[in-house]
Length: 378
Image (cartoon, rainbow, N blue to C red; front, side, top):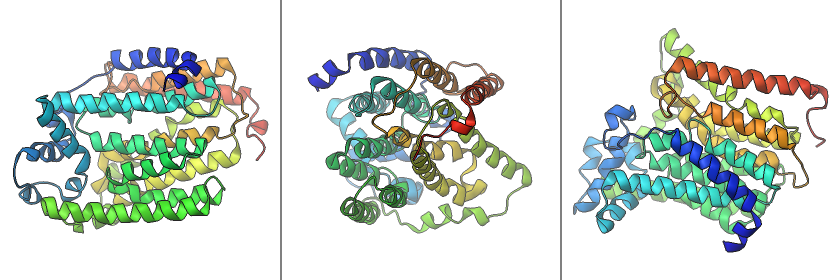
């Protein structure tokens, strides 16, 4: 770790500045006041953390969301940590969130690319408004934070060709959210484009399947939480909804892709863009299949997990990026992160104006780079 710091002094210097901006502009709400955060599902997670103190937690299966109870491990860890340290739950959730961001920062420094590309990757993930911004606003959303980190670990493991990190990412993902089962499809895409070998692909897929079944089985034992409710989360798209709700749902989905436009500042390898977009579509398929009736306004939060795969856009080890474009990219990411709920920005109208400004700037730079020569050769 000391060698990593010595070799990345420039990265850590810039990262400290970016983290300071993140925390100074961040809004944090007491995780126990889940009604105020707008994330009522955190009530389920907090109940799991609290039940660590009780001899039997099976009563939770009667009162709380079944699929939420299946995301038990991160919340049990918080409950145990709170109990062992006498730290209150609010501080315990925040402690874990800070730890995740610090580990994410260290992991970013280990990526085997040039410093400017490390900064670009770090900024793209740190400042995505529905990632760490959201997790610090509602710290009890720890399962999402763990899964977000797991996806980033997955991408970094491919760049660095580290099997241990690859399987650690899958284990972390498997005990975070049921969404981890979709990583089997992403593994196939990486195999298809020869980024992982057949042995890694098969072993990784089997591991995810085993963890999915094991996690659900343990949730059934601990909380009497069955898996019957999972089906509606991939069939809700067939539920009838009003035209207004459908338009709002699709508009939020469109906003997600608008927030990705700063990436067009760079000339990227076509195959890497395809891998990234497939990863985005696979992760986004779950909230899309659940439909507007079930997913509702959560489509941005659920699709945001895929942003953690942004390192794959820079898998070309010999690629270089312009320092000025790096600066512009970081600035646009910082601007996009100023969400009207999760940051100090005052209103939704102001935030939409900021996002539109970022979108236009990105396209101006794209036009200036001559779109006909945009992609690097395959």
